[in-house]
Length: 160
Image (tube, rainbow, N blue to C red):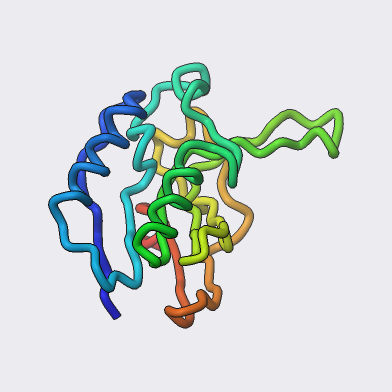
């Protein structure tokens, strides 16, 4: 199995610049025959927001946000699974009058460009507590086509 870790330091709130940085790194790498590409926690929004108001412009719905769209495109282009962290906004209008929910999440996109998994961070760091809810379950564990069984946690989750 060939795994690529696209590690970089995303700048807070600089989504387009962070995407450009990730694209530039991929261009200089040799992603041929890559099975899995993993990006950082909150890869394109950056990390460490002071409040919900501060992170609000970066919040995304799964499947249609910029992180999902980028991951789908890269998965198709390189025929690999992509995991990327992002700040998730969950639409709860079908549970009216509930407010939207927000999570520090990571999505899994398969090599066909389909979102097949989404993990919500369960153990928040104090900087997450200003805007995010704890995920409802512990580590995500699921079978990913082409990879086998995969478990996911984000940052502080690994401590528990």
